[in-house]
Length: 388
Picture (tube, rainbow, N blue to C red):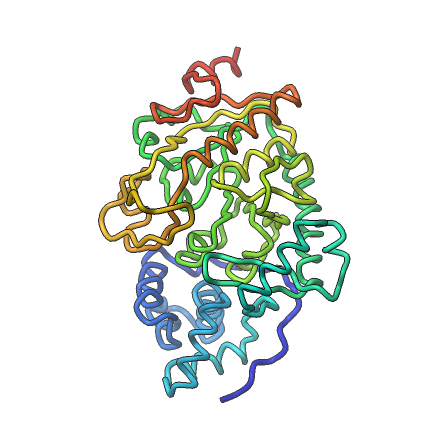
């Protein structure tokens, strides 16, 4: 089998046409879930009648970048090809010819990942200046390292784009959306024109997604299982640099140096940002750094239905309807990591302290739920205060 070509340098992806309909994306997602990747013939299936060869290749390449370009998917393709799968071998060769981009990423052992993460946490600024040390990223049992030059370039782009993101702020108030079932009881009719920020699969929400200025994803399993949900959105994406082996760069992606370890709240999210408990904590650091002085929370239920024995990060397979989110199909058929609402409460307390220290505030406008860290109000009352 042909050897992997040298990994390409970072490039901006611009999709010239909306090649990927919801129907095509759904079909490809089902194939990928079944086979581990989308075969070449499926990439060229269901073409419009008027499509010529050039358009057919462009659409197939777009689909391949969405569904087949992540590190783990490429690894599955290579393993299947080596095992004699002709579909995988053909797909791999075609993707090489088309130069479908991939991040310079390598699978590493847990021990090596822990060593690198310890160095990174000890002195993030120094770590990023040391070209001999690869950048670590882990998710449960999976561990990777990235070429440091690649990460440095991503973070440089992230800083530049963050400045643009902050300059586009329309007011001092942001609305941060959690994805709890209380969203279905929330009056969303007055949100048009507000600075709204969503996370994860809220990209599927028929009202919130079109209104949102940005989406954040901080969880590997969310991104890896449905990359099509975060492709060509036309809105800001806020991502850990370690997700660059799953989601491609585009001109509206803000890459950040996301760190675990001891809990902190970052005053400089473009230099380092805490990655703890919930993507909402990730967003709260970004929004304060961007100049927002009031953040209204909706859909932030802070409750989870999960096995009693599950601890934070335990990988669970959602077979039945999802009772933890606004859509019963949110995680249905997918894997997700068990939550720790106590840990979430602690990070929200840390966020509250940081906001108060800056003369800013977080207001919980969730309909019900169990989050009692912040002052409670109604969305209607807080939006009326903006208009007054």
